[in-house]
Length: 182
Image (tube, rainbow, N blue to C red; front, side, top):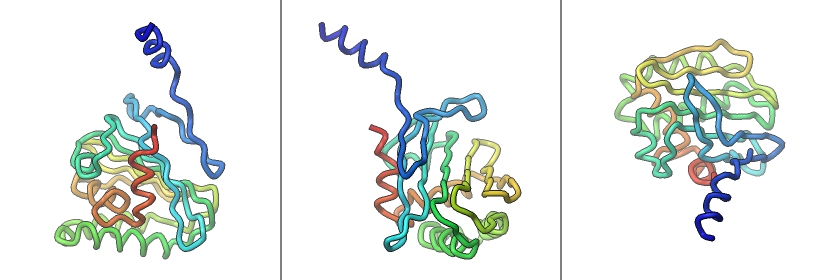
């Protein structure tokens, strides 16, 4: 009887998560690999809902340092819940890099500048999609801006640390991105 129940539970497909009107699928296909939704987190600034961030990875790991260290396809998708000026995004990302990757900034700064330059003003409903590909780099597409690729796992680690590092942009957001997939 227990085996039949276990088989039945495993046969139930994972369901999409919905929050703030945004739907995140339990799995997505990226470069012919299946990525799994780790979590869906809400970024709030004061009382304002800013964006919803979905974290997808090939091999789910709930420990942030291990996840950052892992060399697998990873994706953060931010769905804007309000209009956001480029300057606010640039400021938050720059601060996240400085808080989490200060010693590496001399070798990261040129790539960070290219990333920040690619960020336009964003409207509610637009997205920023950041995908790290091992041996290829980090592909970034922000709203209607130009799609760019930046080399180096070190850059990807620093960028993903903005949300998942020791000093994330928002502790609650980090927790939700890592573990609300249950």
